Length: 123
Image (cartoon, rainbow, N blue to C red; front, side, top):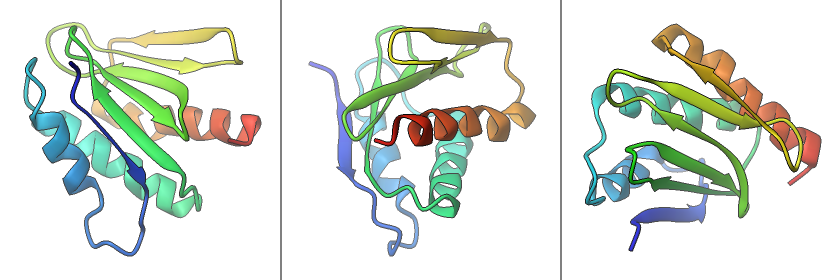
């Protein structure tokens, strides 16, 4: 059905995001573009800085967005393909916020929203 990648994040690898990107490229919906590649790379770098080493799962959805799970819990989604770009993150266990019209400079701030939620919930 959906191609996704789930694994325990290992910071000892030189480029741990490469395997994640190769699995997302196997999706029948679309390949990983350059903007998504940079986002995933930054995601792994920021998780490394914050010492978050749980299970990371990225799944391509039919609307070409990427669904993000940490230790099996949903954290958010991001769509960087096409004209309309957006980012969602969980505010609490039952509510989420959506940010539209993304710029590449916003990625660092947006990933920090995911990190804040993960630390708040203590996954």
